[in-house]
Image (cartoon, helix red, strand yellow):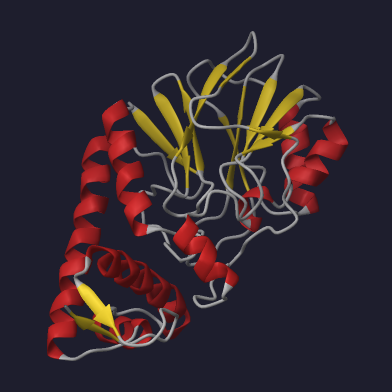
Length: 287
């Protein structure tokens, strides 16, 4: 294995899609002690490629969040290497009390792609430092896309999972996705002024600050569009998605979940109101 101190090795899984882009990128850093970041889907060929790249030296398996395209292979890879799996917690760890209540009531549905079997050997929290003679990584709790989403700071590079991508905005699907948390996490990464962001899907982001600003501006613009549409006519999340998004039919469910995240955030701010219990089909009106 030949990995420089500045450049990780990449192993691309064969799972391209409209939501994963070219597929899941598994990163490997280190030489004598190799860390695998986001082992990807539980695919035998992908795991074999990781094992070949790790050359028998895999010592840690780090998972940004418990979605099947990121964490699915963690257990298999751990059994084959003996390396512990590190993550924030189970698939639902980190939900806010409000989101936890709504999830318990099944009011929002959601849960797309959750890896319910995921259980890390070691739970890591915000600010924890993982260190070997080869590398040092600091964990950052960066919820928004997922309640237990972690990013991993490696020098001036941050492995940012699904929080930030260069080719697309991330899916925010309640109760695991939270728009308010997403904005806070974007601000947190910006405050670090990283030199480079490495998403799990798609290419590296070599100008992080403009990209972070663009993503925040995009969400604020979407919020303004939602409020304007509601002033024309009250609607539920799916109706608003049909009115506001120009996407193929297969992407409408994801667009609907994103709109629902905006509506929940706006309801917390008192900017929109609704009559019935909050849920996936709730009709919202401007306050």
